[in-house]
Length: 127
Image 1: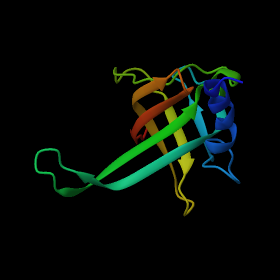
Image 2: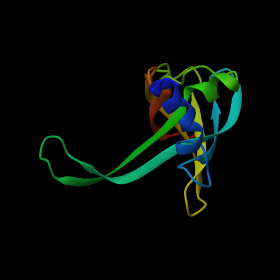
Image 3: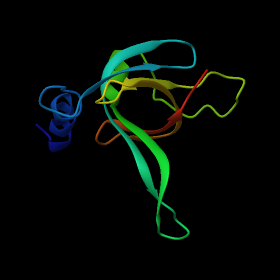
């Protein structure tokens, strides 16, 4: 098997498996209201580097990595930013390790079609 195909197949364990991998349950909803329950890799960091000063500052950086094949299996497209405020955005809902849940909207998405993942930057969303 080609190494790329093997790496994509291994995402089922490394990225999506909640017991042995980094998998974390989430609900992803597209602007039309279609949704899928799937496993993601997520981060929510409260310390950022100020690009002007190089100093650590308080802030919020939220992101997820999603397997493209799973999005396809759930009949969802590739998440993307929806810039018009009058339109509904792509949203991702998940809990942290302490059980606090929250909804976020996708503000940017970078698909990697070679590996088969999409990395999304998120921000807190209150509809």
